[in-house]
Image (cartoon, rainbow, N blue to C red; front, side, top):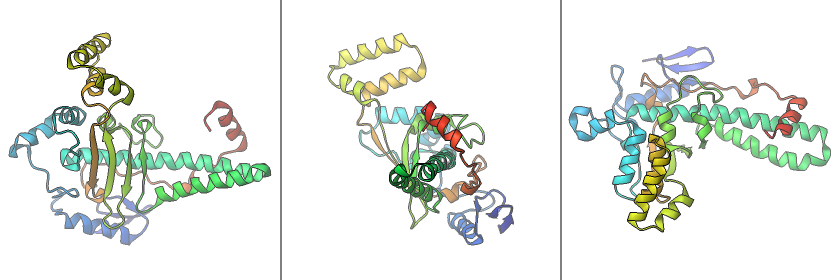
Length: 295
């Protein structure tokens, strides 16, 4: 499948990521072919081998039919404490959804940082007495923008990145990703291009400490009382998780090649963000934002 020149850059095939240079698009194509791409499919997603069809075992059926938030919760509740949660515990589509949220968070965070950077530059120009402090903050903001714009981005995902009204949103965010991982940090390995997600699957520390001081009977009674007061499935999961998974939880160590996810039809690709095209913030808007507590 050839690299094509399209509006805004180069793309491998019909659904690949948009790159500013032809060489980067060709690199994606080589990575996908190396992973076993053939006739519209892929053989692997990163450190794991090809996802097994559901017919190959009970775990395949488990992954196919049980939503990831419920699946990971039950595995953490009943599985081996301290055992890392890895990419092998997710389907190819679920990994693509994680990457989609990362790409949307990058676009959103760049907009936020540019807004703050414009304000600091305005301070330097209009308040000389604040120039040194504003310059320090501006340098930090620029460093964050540079890290996000890098070919190997690093950053974090917050709960707000899962909301439908989140900036740069391109459709219905896969909310089960949010109720599975929540907040996490990610990096990109320059040597391999793999995305590495690091987190801990755990629950509220204060309540977990209270439960830890109870004997088994007291703990079960407290959980039942909490659930009875708010008979909601998600709330019940939260209460059980705080009581029986706690703050220790399981470490999250997910690693995958984002280039190999883009041949999955459900993956919509990353928003293309030109930081120079973002609207500049006027001093009046900055003053209003400060008054409202936004900055």
